[in-house]
Image (cartoon, rainbow, N blue to C red; front, side, top):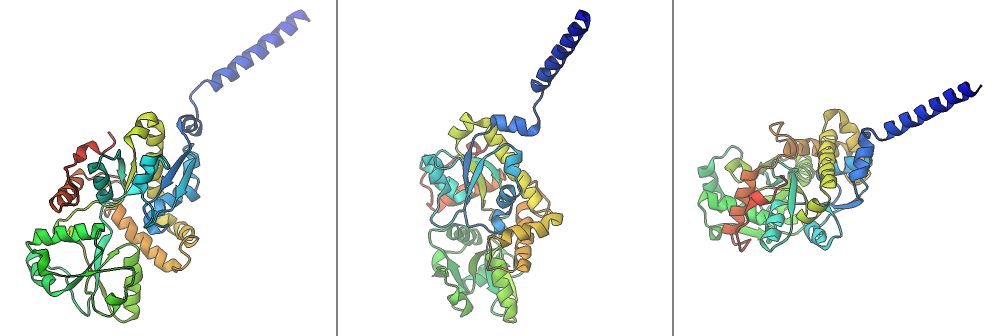
Length: 341
């Protein structure tokens, strides 16, 4: 009887050690991420729409939780500045365009670029083909055309910097152009007072194109990238300070966002992504949202030429040079020091 009790005791002890050993072994993915994460806030650049598809997918489909991250996603907008909030410690991650990053860094801001979301800048100029057609023009022909057109510009916006870079590359003087200072009112464009109107190709561009088609017209787009102007758009950012203190959280957050963008733009997930966006974009039809997603996919994936999140350092260098030459930044920025190693 005593031997039997000893055997039972040894068996229980063995089981206990086995359980402890299992508990001390390699953690599951969720356990590993949970141990290294910290609650964070994430400020987007603009309102929830197709340009934030990956972010919304991560939020709505539980990807943040899968990575053990507790993330508060904050909508952007004209009154929001992700870089300012990063510096004040109100958020730990954000989205900003290259011109915003370079302006801030030239003034001494602490910004670290983790990934470049858009491989092609969505900011382009839309026009009605019944009035003007710039399709297929080479630089020489475009140089001849532009002085005869009225071009919409948001003074102080990145569209001003991009367009002036194009003007310079064509060998034109800004004084030779007809520039119209635009607001959010599209009336001057519809009336024909402005020939070229700046818009985001994947969102406003879709809406404006559909309206033109209803009017019996056809849309065209002037894309500065077709003429060698590679101006970097939205990128994922944090601060070097936060990355140094929480390297694992930064690594996981970046990986999560890029995976979310990949999933959000997969053709087989289109219907579900449209359904998610419908809850945020209540004034836009599902068919329009689907078109916006397709346009976004082409801009983010560069027609499949690059992996999502690829940082085009040459484009960053060109953006920095354009801004310095135009006096938009007062001191040079070493772009090679902006990126996550």
